[in-house]
Image (tube, rainbow, N blue to C red; front, top):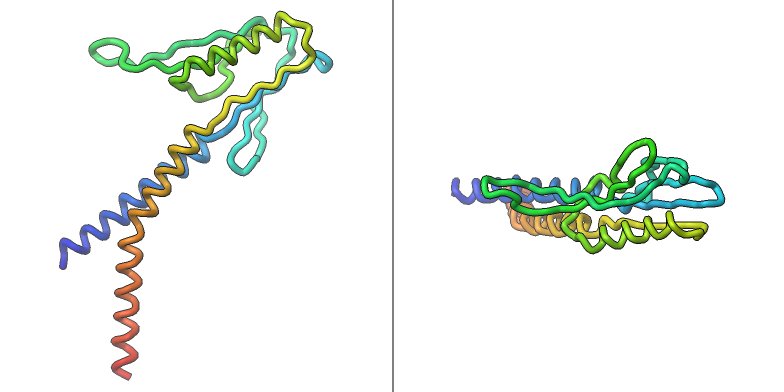
Length: 175
């Protein structure tokens, strides 16, 4: 009986950890990032929206200071060299270089597309640039973790319900 209780406690703990990791991914990394530049206002804004559509202003800067966009390749290294590559879209301004998003990804093609759109806008006379970097992948992974965590909790919760029914029945039968 003791091993069974340890298994149930283990499922409760591991399920809770999975739910916690999933919620953290959804809430902190699952944000959509927007770049909105307008020639008429001479302003660029970077802001994020979370899963609840709460908008958080990240940065505002003058459009005239934007020189170019470029991709930065990041490497997680091991003893054998570059283990895996991720990419970030960087904005180069007269006041410095900063990332479009706080998260890097392995999808180089989406970063290339972002850089091309930003650089084309800089060179053109187009009035407005609206760009979105989606946090869908982080949200999907987070939802998977939450689902797995809840599935791990089904057996312990079911066992708690059965034990509660057994305890209530034993008190009712004594009366």
